[in-house]
Amino acid sequence: MHQNEFVFEPLPQPSLRVIGSDKLFPVHRIYCVGRNYADHAIEMGHDPDREPPFFFQKNPDCLLTDGRDFPYPSATKDVHFEMEMVVALGKGGSDIATENALDHIFGYAVGLDMTRRDLQGEAKKLGRPWEVGKAFEASAPCSAVVPATHIGHPAKGAVWLKVNGAERQRGDLEQMIWKIPETVSYLSTLFTLQAGDLIYTGTPAGVGAVLPGDEMIGGVDGIGEIRVRVA
Image (cartoon, rainbow, N blue to C red):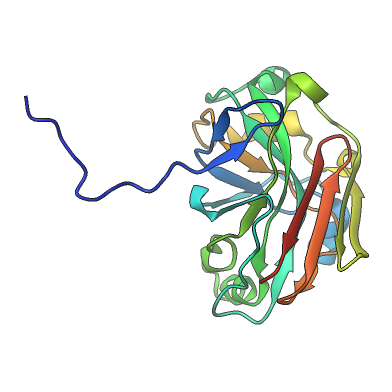
């Protein structure tokens, strides 16, 4: 029997290291929650009242694994950082009940939602999608995944970022407008979630620009840290 072959070699499976294991976490999709901290919503000129959450996506190959430099992207003069806690799903499903949502989480990581803010702003003004501002190469730096069996399910703890040693962002997980179980549940009504999905859960206020040569160090208390140099 003839065995089908690809017309060219497929790209490698995007993945993240897992703390305490020699196995890798295979990444399926990357979902991002927009404006999930009230102070950041105000900072971006929006009403922080608890409206239904909204989401955008980055491609799995937008991942930048911990320790690699972030290459300053093309076609922009205004690249912003957004420090976030990342949820890593170990089980998928649709219409997941809020009270069962934590059972679907494999673990947690810390990540950066890097944004070409000028391109995103122009897309917003024209009523166009955000992909050019959000889903470019290396736009999703992410640390290794810490299993929930090691740390539980963090609901509070500082989210912070320093650029060249100066603190630029600081918030707390308990300031999230939509908590993690609610976010997973709501997202599962819009998409069929899968094991391997990552959810970037929103950023506190203080987002700003970086330039080549800058060093970003950020973290989420109880989960870990990430260090990224802009190249």
